[in-house]
Image (cartoon, rainbow, N blue to C red; front, side, top):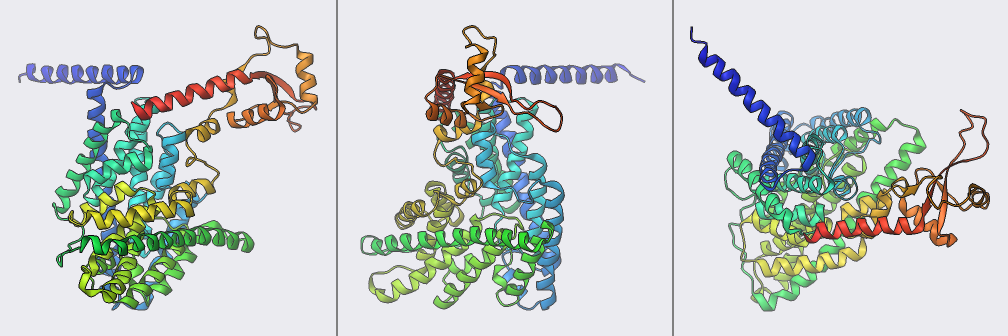
Length: 565
């Protein structure tokens, strides 16, 4: 028996393992080199692509097992199903979702795009892994059993879980962590929509909220990787086929698309408001009745099941309804009624905390709104109007852009999903006006409004959220520091209520400096009456106003360098 070959293989594996360990150690200590980072971007894009495709296939598998149809044939198939299946499925799905979220999240809330934005801004590109995985499973069950929401939000957060695991493994810096998160988001969005350009733009525009040159290449690599994974499974076909064509009587018809854009902004704002009001109402009811929080999704599922017996188009993502609207197969009153019922179903699903995203429902709402408007517009001026499906296409982009607060990437998603690049003027006209008006009606987007409701002020920019992120311990000096004031002076300041509390954030300290006009403030630790007999607060440190301002200025400079680097 020749043992030389076995010895060579053992030595070879040991050599490769040693090289890998040394490379990982260097990456941890110094950060990844450019080549290493591009390789990580490729791997993360592939992982995000598989996550997106697997999530989509999982939804289809559950839907076929329960309803005998997938999302592209759901509305036409569910009509013939027994009512008890349509009603019971979302109830059981909601019950499963409620139990999952109750046991694996602290607040019973599904994680989504807003949490990814928060992770990019405040957590160095990290998101919650345990809650994120639970949210992905919950959203998969929701969409498979009859929930009325989208698949893109859960997929984006699931991709963020992948990048977070990598960032923790290599101990990535906040800048590297954010770039890795951007790569994951780009790969997931590209794989979800078969849209590599839109995936890359979405990561910059929505999640990172800047277009840094240093991040563009790896994010583009990840987006391409995600797209390849999608096309290896589904082929290179577009999501929607506009076989009837989308002719535009350019100059004469553009005012109609301007009006459509303004209308879509109102529709988007109403849809978002309905979701937030439904969430508040459901929280109020659960609090007043004392019902356990894990029942909330099941109650929402019961309401959805009752609606679905009459309007099965609300089940799932809703791409069959979108395709019918884009091809002009729905009449005016059908489009209006379907849009109203869809908005109600989305509000119940998300307000009931069943899981899923908002973007796909926004596309459904936009296509129905645009179709209804187009039927009226082309009916009034038939001699100078194009096809109604062009209005549905523009409406789809306009409502989606208003909801996301991302006109560039949304317009690109519409173009790549339909393969129709000849309608850019009409779509961009509606998208731009819709985004401009909607940003005045909400906190710039659905996701940023969600964060505002949780008292996370990302929309105002780094000058607002950076001080909220930084703790005063980072700028504190010891009581024995050279030049420190006498302790008697500090005690007198505490007695007069001029002090900071241990654990405060920098924005609270700056507000206290502004109120008191002091050059320095003592830091105290309040007494814990349960564990000690002390009744007086304990002096722990000193914070100087100049140190706080210097730290904020340095953080702002680093953020600006990242955004423009």
